[in-house]
View 1 (cartoon, rainbow, N blue to C red):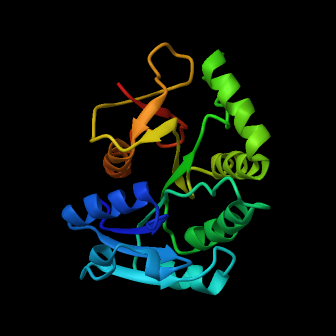
View 2 (view 1 turned 60 degrees about the vertical axis):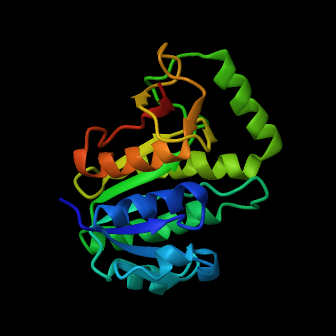
Length: 219
């Protein structure tokens, strides 16, 4: 059982929800952020939370965060449409060797259907959606695809990774989640942030999707 999570993305809506769910379950959290002022005060002040401020490119800060005693990592970040370059991907390439050196194996990483899994099937709705994103936010797409590709290239003996691919996120309450693949006849086009946060926390322990890249949606 894991007890101390290194969380990236705690200032976002899904990451904040994940942090709250994890704290209710008595996990310890180390939160890595660029701007600590954006962390929910109730989270930042919690006795089980350590906040580390740094850039993803800062190797010494990443090592400091990992050395707080974490035993698992959740990355609920994907950049935004205004992002230029690939700072997230570059940061992950810095982070993973640190995790391996410190024997932190469990990793859950956020991605999108822009990364195509071999088990996916053709679906016109998602195909057009992905093409639109390439047109609107090319650098963001390079990041999420690169992040998934780089994560999947890691040896499972060193990193027990799960790449989760998500559709449009909503603010609805938590609902049952279907985990499968694009175009399998059951995957749908929306997922609530609460559902995402809860599923990630459950999968962290269950490890049903280690070494896989499921597509999540609400049933």
